[in-house]
Length: 548
Image (tube, rainbow, N blue to C red; front, side, top):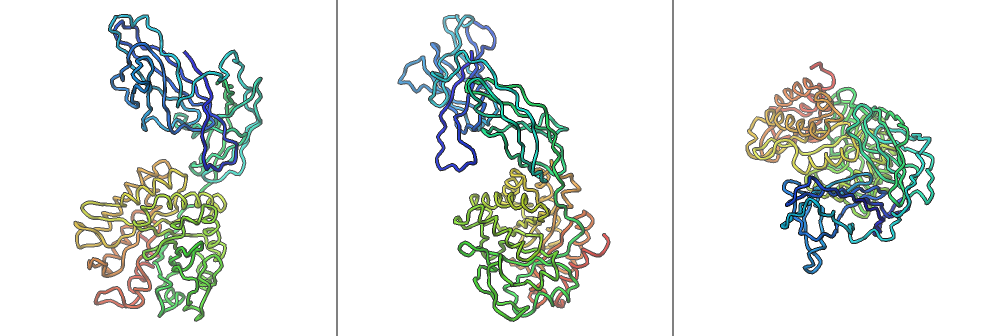
């Protein structure tokens, strides 16, 4: 038994590039077996699209009382008709939702027949979805499918996305939408389907340098579907790679008043630093959140807005492989400001890169900010736009990593954030572990604790990015940032620890060694004896030049 009908989808405050159209939903029911006393009815709900269904309430009628079939799960039966036993409602649970465009899901509903008439019982009738019934749905005599979509082409192909276009299908009544299916060409079972009312759609969240197969089918209001189009093969472009080993301690350029950044780099024997920190100020991104800022390199006050400031221009022009860090341990990044929307945030990130002529942004995100899911979503959407606009952008994500009894590797906030990046097709150039202030049970040897944290983080990254990177690739895309000398919990990271950490990270093939921080190191603020300024930074510099 088959029902086909339109559902009116309420879209409130939804901004979209195409018209919102009622989704076409099909419901099909069949009996399993022919027992006289008990029978299970398989009910399949297929959402042709073009919209996803986030909520599904399946209504139906039957003279006998239904029960949930053992082991099927995924739904809850209710009587919502004031005790009238012939009308029932089945709620799909979160385990079955959302029902995406082009997707079908089934439940099994059991029926007991106390009079032994099950073998000849009629199927349930009067199906509805979310209260809408098939009356006037156009399911009557129309059985003519749309024509097959033709002339598939790809445009604007990038490492993690491309635009797919095709010629429109035709139909005797009218085409309602299209289902676009795409999959890694060497792995057809890993296909995904999306719905659209347009004759083009952007496919994102892809792997770089990989071939995908794409097909399109059309459907009408009666649920008639065309055959799938011929397969179009599209190969994404190559993404950014870490490149050579990089030694780049952090420099708190605002907090450092005594020594210029240019002098620090020269004395330490470095060629790169991670310069921080860009924080949000109203609708802008400013150095340390200041509207004006003193520049020790030029001895003048500069505009703090990092999209137009001359602050650090001399240093970053001289050392363009350095990174600019957004966020940091003190303030909040621009993404934390809800008044800065995705497009504005994209403009900020792009503006920083354009203003200074660098290619690398570091996002130093602490747990406080990592708990702000709305802000993280804004950030990720903006970064997706940034990478599409500037595919050569290098992204470093610096996240806290622990070696305590309770937490090893990234915190749950950090791990969830990496999942958010992966789920949106954002592949970091480097994921850097912030190795400082380890918790209880981590021990006093901070090299040993750092190894525990790094190996645990590697395992977490593997679970999230296993489709993108091999085990060795993961190490290549990792970085380490210890805190030089005395940590805030009074444990001490020694020079010997730094030497050992260099060797470990080189041996694993890691691409980045950082450290907190060269300005502490330069100004004798690491809090230990038997130490000379720049000792730690000089040791970090060896990471990039000495063989493992």
